Image 1 (cartoon, rainbow, N blue to C red):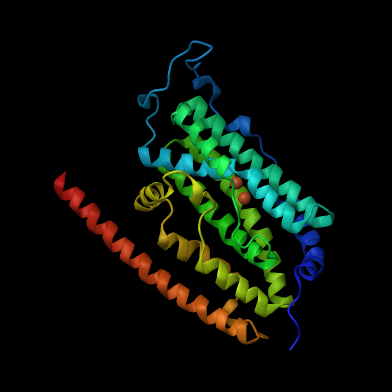
Image 2 (image 1 turned 90 degrees about the vertical axis):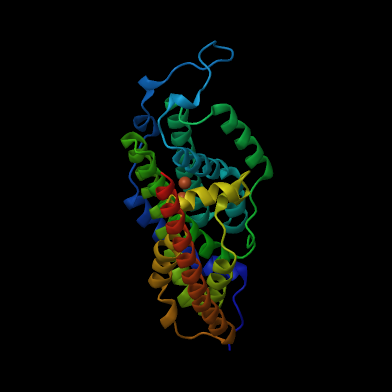
Length: 312
Ligand SMILES: [Fe+2]
Ligand SMILES: [Fe+2]
């Protein structure tokens, strides 16, 4: 049995895969401009130093739950300095890894800019509450629970990028505003390319160190949380988001976890050590648990919808 690869060895071995997928990413990524997605002519000066009109909820017709999801998605994007710190510390700032870290950061920076401009101009959310929430959220920072482990981090971001893709896309639909939907579809397309990059890297790790890769995936799925988990009132907000079908357990299992696991073909990976086999068993059990939890949630949501319909 060969000894597990060290974190440094993993980074070195994966460097050529990073270089190849960076080229792939750059050839696929489409340049886009945040300012083109914002309806600037709808904007009005706010109160404060310029003496405009204060924000009022009636300024926008976007449904409440879509506003909640937009706030969660934007605050998540806002915490980019912390994410950058996490991956720059782990992956380094040199060579192909470093080029990726900086390019990825630049792309993510565009997301926060675009969504904030849109929300401010259209007056979709209270800009004072939003700014206070941003200060609180960024002041707390973000810490990756597996921050010093390369494969765990790659597994986490593979799922997380796909999760944000689904969340942005469904948030766009929930706004019923074609302009917002177009913007969030554009952002979601970026998140998908990020997911493919990380998923391909971990796919290569499955060939390099199958047992370690399986362990990483199993550990990450067991304690997976969305990156916005530290947002004030996150539990309450995520229930509202799940009830609206923007991001719920069913989507998490069937549209995020399963497709990524399928790409890695985890249930047919060979060359696992004992711990890798144990990790794969844990993944299978986790999928069963998720299935039960998702079904339970759907039943409760349906029952709630019927009750509300009967009352109305
Ligand atoms: Fe993003
Ligand atoms: Fe992303």
